[in-house]
Length: 102
Image 1: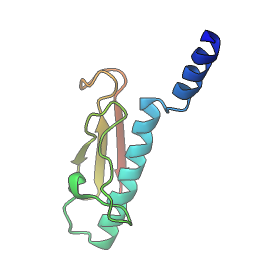
Image 2 (image 1 turned 45 degrees about the horizontal axis):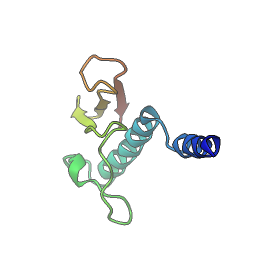
Image 3 (image 1 turned 180 degrees about the horizontal axis):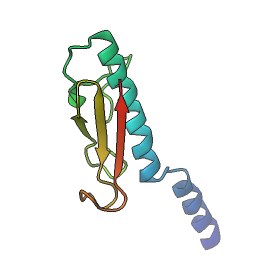
Image 4 (image 1 turned 180 degrees about the vertical axis):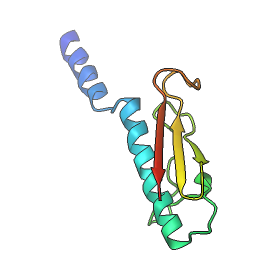
């Protein structure tokens, strides 16, 4: 019986994606929505707190470790999305820094 329970627990936890994968996927989703927002209104200010999907649901701005993904405008057309990763410390290992240009 113990092996059966252990196997079930292992199976359950294997279905949960690792935080690094969740973070990368959320950063991609945020980039897509920022691109859409800027395409519709180039002069708009990006506020991650207010980004919504097609069904008007708020988009998660938390990384896989439940910390906020940070947004920064580097220039008029260059942007950066950052997660400080597992340790939550700038410059720690691994940070996820995603640059993109519109």
